[in-house]
Image 1 (tube, rainbow, N blue to C red):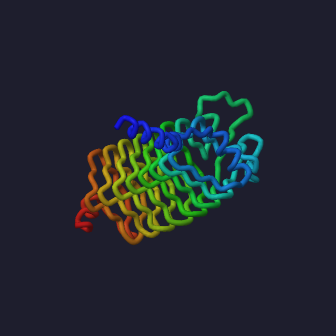
Image 2: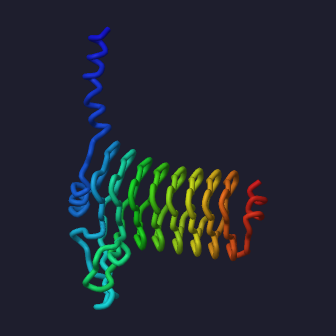
Image 3: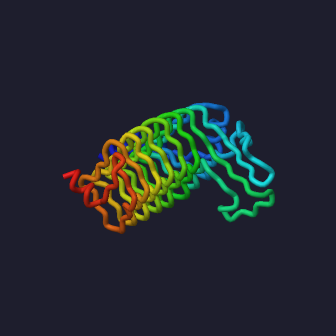
Length: 260
């Protein structure tokens, strides 16, 4: 019996090693800079995955001597499944807001994505910033977990977006975002503020069975088609002032009635 158990352990060692594979973030950045498709599963990403200063980084034309903006572009698809990110995941960086000494004036770095972006069942242990990013392909963060703020303010999505079953441990910042396709936050958990102020949902949004433990901020949000809050729990405060559904002002109470 002991011999069989030992044999099983030996046979499982390669699988265990693969499941716990560690990858340096610098290795991934090198692939992205070369324009290669990136795909990882069951990996621990060590170090900051900083995509704001790729080889193709360019200074934006509207930049001036007082304010410089730089854009990097991820050309190929990104796929991360069942991965843990030990450091920051950055598609946006502003030295003035980071605590670093900035001697060259006001600078801002952002990253755009031309292919599909998939972070499914992943854990972000540190910062995750996609502010101002443009996503040309499909985007999925399904079943992922953010320990800190999930920063998507001003992000530009062109196709379908999936944030279903995501756990937002810090603020979920989607302020000023426009969703041209239907987006799902079904089953998502918002532990802190869910900020959808001024957000536009052009083809509806699904918050079915979502849990809002912090403030649910939908002030000035505009929703077309449908606003599904069936089974959603609003345990914190909520702000639906000036929220519009199909060009008519709507309250949380009215939404609950609609979704019975």
